[in-house]
Image (cartoon, rainbow, N blue to C red; front, side):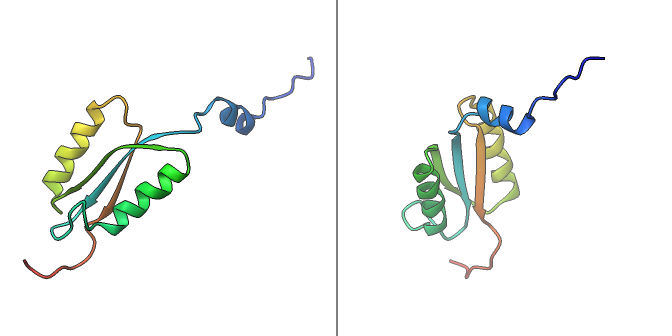
Length: 95
């Protein structure tokens, strides 16, 4: 049997993989807006600094149903490859 060399799968993956992704950043909050959401701003800034595109950046209500609907909407968008969520984990004063 000939001595066949297995391909270097990590190197092959890196060669074929896109270095850039199109990302949606969603903040879940009942108190934040796009204007005052620092965590979402930082995530977007770091992604763009890394060469990624962030065509979707929004703040939605901290609700399972709203998140589910937003994710379904994003899944229909063929140009979105990654969804990052932030927020929705802490306590906030009622407004």
